[in-house]
Image (cartoon, rainbow, N blue to C red):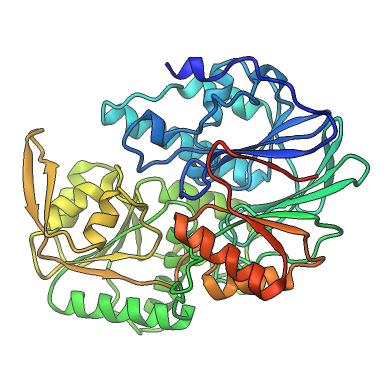
Length: 473
């Protein structure tokens, strides 16, 4: 059982600091690692793989000998996406009583997404090993930190959070270990480019000896178009689809991509550059957007200026319509041409799958992927060009859905850095670390990025496997 995964951990030589990979290494999803110092045990993220096929591939490997829930001093969360925070309530289910550290925006969004995750799992009769009361317990134990504030989180670790530019409240986590004996930076997911929503990731730190960095788009072929070109490509797809009387379905993550697209669509419609049609928001998008409006201090300077000085909040434009129930969904599908932004972003559940079933067999419609599609997800299958998709219909029977709609992938909207930005970040990182560990990427991308950084900047690099421990000091 899952409960058997957590047991009394083993001890180790007190002279070193080490990192144990428990998920999210040479894969995307279930990010989780254990930082051990002579006097502390701290968990860095604790996520789920929403595209996982079973318990073994969905949840972090908490059964490693080093991990003991009784000895855990703290959990640090880089940002609110489920692949980084979705499994934290489970820790409280099995006796953890300690703190969770993150930004206030991460706490708010993390709570929304975890509750939605529980709700979807319940609706799809796929129960999780924790429930709402464990989320509530987690909230009570969460301590929020602003960027730049130094905090003692364990006997020999000080934590400072810095802007990561990925989603609202996302943070790079800087750990000052011992009396400065070692300084570790964990980037989490980051965007080293200004977006419409956020400022770019920080690159300057007081000290960094080791850095753990993401490599989602770390392959040498991961050169994405500019944001401007991506926006034009999206508008061209929308224009063509609306002109032929179709509907545009965009599966999005409720946090990050949805708000980025809302800003783009609102601006293009306001300037008359694309036809004004209803933009339907389905899933947790509306609630997540409310958090963005409530936490403007995390937004980009341009967006803050719009909201505070120009009196224009693009998130509350009249074009946006919150979808309330299934009856409304049917009206949207049968109604006039429109744009639908719906969760989940990888079509692993949620209403994007229902819209797909209704719309996929009409060649006038389009589906547009603007975010990462994990291997094994329905989104990845459609993206790869599968024309026959077996899914349950409304009566619960399996049937084959023939994909006749236009399938489009538009790179450039991602909240992750592309290959060029990852290399530039490693180059600009100041001070330059002695060691860079790559995580959060497909196996060959993780290795490709690590070897390129090593060749270009003469830094020691490492690409651990899950369950592998790396000595940092």
